[in-house]
Image (cartoon, rainbow over all chains, first blue to last red):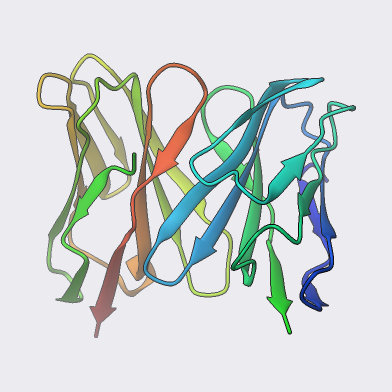
Length: 110
Length: 109
């Protein structure tokens, strides 16, 4: 089955720790995206990548980092510099406009 | 900059119609519409490219006014399954897809 897999589904971390969220797709899509979802804020774009080894900052990139070493993978690192990291994170991929979303990762900072 | 959606929330009875609006201050290349049910990932409804075209998906259709940078989603004869949060996404032609804050649609029996 083709799709997007995000892991872990739930993650808890202590303040000051970095954490990496995984996103893997087997749809052979070129473009991949990371969004953050908070109540009442909609989906806010963190980073996006059109091709391997290239990515661009979205609207709220501060405190986050990404890499795109393989077409299938687009991991997101939430660093200790992110002041309010508790949120629901969604990864998506696209080849012709339509976005396909993963099931999301819920990060809670204790 | 996030597109602006209106209304923020709407409550319908089954069979009623609704319109959700989306506007941007920038020249748009395309507008996307997605629906998200509680606890699930957003699901694609349709995409409209600049040119003022209108698209349909069963009883859900949308229009795109390129001159006004506005799009509207039309839900006709709503069903209980239409409940969820609707997001419009706007793209300027550079793969950067920005979403609005969403419109919560509740359809009651």
